[in-house]
Length: 513
Image (cartoon, rainbow, N blue to C red; front, side):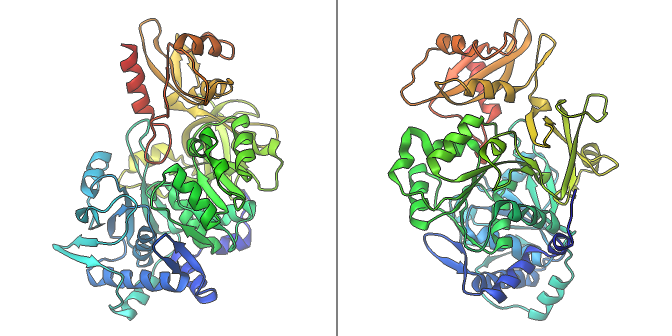
């Protein structure tokens, strides 16, 4: 772990402080934009301070919990920063559901002091406006109108420290139940502080917000844009053709997303109808991919692609370097961020050596404060030395590159043998006819549990299940060979764009019967 003095100083500031700095140094530069408006740093600061003053007037104070419907829009970013500026903690909820319904369904015990939502107005998952703040027995509109006690706001903002709670992100629950991850201001700043030098990101870049803001990867894009001082464009939807048009028209240079989305951009060669020459950088994380797929994406989009690895509990863990050759960037998920340290342990808890697979343990500046309201789960996840036991399996090679094998809970135990779903997915995706794939374990009469695969075929390829199984037998061992294969036009995805393993498992088990 290497933490320079400059980075220490950077991580002692909150995102609100960075907004003030940019508003002072480049007030007329556009920070947040959409088809409807462009918000400069000066205007963003005005709106943030106006909302924060209103929150104070409504009785919100440091430490209060604000449940915020996180629509993928400019407002969500501004409202999150406004709450954090006075020390309140925003719990970002999935905009597909009413706030109270979402909180209930996570299973997390949480009683917010305030709720901020535009669900009653029927606003979509990417819409701003029509915000209503409820709490203390009152409900009122939030319009970013100026007013309130300026002195009270400055006093409240001056009492907020970088190591205090900033927001709550709920884990996706794509393979199980959700947890409420409590992140500090420092956690959210440390990630871009580490990433910017590696990616060469700066004020001239223009990023596009493709990911839900209630997921850590999505909010990290917003944090990075504020830290770096560059524009972040919010599209009205994520329809593939529309996104390609936006990249062309808005001259997008930076794109962050999951492997499935990058592959969808290129499906059927649709990308070739657009001028995408402005693209220079892509960060790809959140799912398995092959080196061949990475080279394909780079070749088609003309950008430099950086694989990455992070999670809600530890925002950034590893990534590639922009200047590294493609062979290095295509290997694993990169090397550890400078302000992060990690090792791999075996079943007995002992540290393993180079090339040995085990559970990844990590600590660093982006490590969460803990699970909200669940000290037992926090103690189980973070050991006495401050290392997070991620639940992910992987190994380091001799050069320090990290490789991910899969989740411990995703390991399929077939006839007493452990099978990595990620390993099987990568082998299946190496077949010439397969565009992408997802593997899960399903119940099997012969061996209790066995692999099953859902695949998306490349354009022009047609295969029966028997043909696919025959081709898979050329790259898989007998134990890895699926008992069921289903070809589909596209994989079911979670709201964050990852394959929805629960839905995939249900579809494959249903088809098996």
